[in-house]
Length: 299
Length: 299
Figure 1: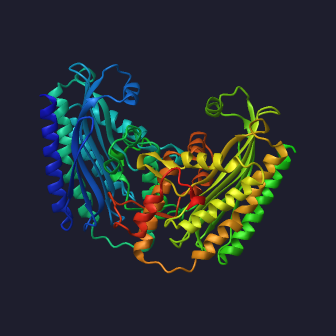
Figure 2: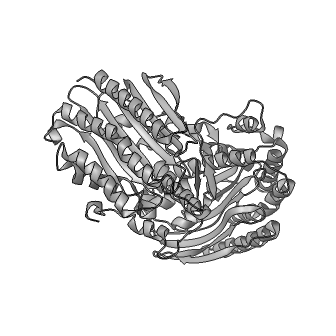
Figure 3: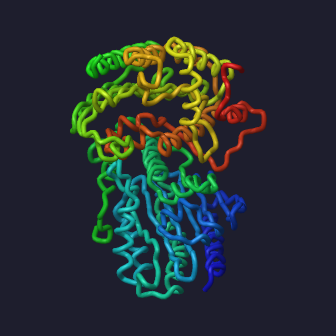
């Protein structure tokens, strides 16, 4: 299982996800942009806009290699000069405020035969949190994790809670999900092949999981007030991505492909001064759930 | 001229600006929120929303003191424990896309009798750049600067070009203006009193300068396409403030008052994937001017 094989499988996962999302959306289709990286490698950026469900989204594949930028070498605390990295990265912003924003990333990073790892995660950001949907989402993630190692879900769920946190707002970005990094056989009971298969299962499980949440909500009626609330929640999403997200910061600092990196930002977002929802409203309920450590499976 | 006097004058400047802006807007008025800082001091946050001209804006005064946070001590490379800081900070987002976004800040920082300085700046972010208006704006700034030191304008203009730069977009935030920091008699031909007067002149010159630009454009008709372009430009403003702005980063890292810090963000902003305006359009013309080092007075 060499790096070319991993990249090829990830590329197929991108293909499968794009096909399935077009089918789910039913109206819009992806526009593809191929790009090459001056230092080595390239990618396929695929953007979908103004769909029946998805207002703006991207499903990106990249496989890049070359000389490791100094900033990365310092961040990773390694001496290696050359690197290889491949992955699939997704953010979808739906138009209907009752359909949640979703993000997924699976990636593989390699410096040499000894120093390599897998990373990734899936997290959900509902504009309106519904307990049954949050439970459904976490249950799906736990099921995938449990096929490989029963310690994965609790560990990766806790990591997502820590990672997807907007410190200055004292709010989580959404209801979390799972997040893992630097996964290797030495840190798990699994072989390289099994860790890779785990990442592929997440990739392949992405659309079925999201389709369920889309189909439950895509036809729900909403008002202008619901839409304004969606803009505010998207504003928080922007704050997280620009202030905290490691991938975004890394991309901006290393002259990454800006349009691919910032495809994660919503089509429209809003900010109001010190907005506080009515007590006991759906909006207030949502805010009350944006905490770390909620056990969604026990709800 | 002690720190209490400086704070008092800055407070009066806030009062004058708010009054004059309400008069200029003609519809909305400021809502005030008083706040105190746990570590010492406090401020007056004043927000105006949904006006005839200003869609969302803030004119904030603060005077805080106490123990210098570790992060600041490191950033400033000083050993002092106690600090005092006061200033007025403004960001105005107009509704009409032909009226520019404006930002101003004047501030004074003191550790002890030896270590203290003034800082500040004004910069303009037109959604649509017009040369004559950019020239007008820079001419006003130069006139204020020249009353004190003819080296100020070229030096502070160059500083603003460097500072208000969105590196990952290779774009300036707007047409710049002036920016200065750590200004002391040792670095200029001026006394403390004169440096302070300079900052007050900027504060007092703010509304007349902006009123001219507002009144030239407030009644211009605009289309939905102009509005969408405004959202994209505001998106860039968000990117600058969350990724680069020193004051914002500093505030977020030191548990500043979040709503006051992020009042600089626009009411609505947008992102489109890889949007490129039509060649020779007003939008393309605007992009072509978003470069460092443009000599607006020579245009």
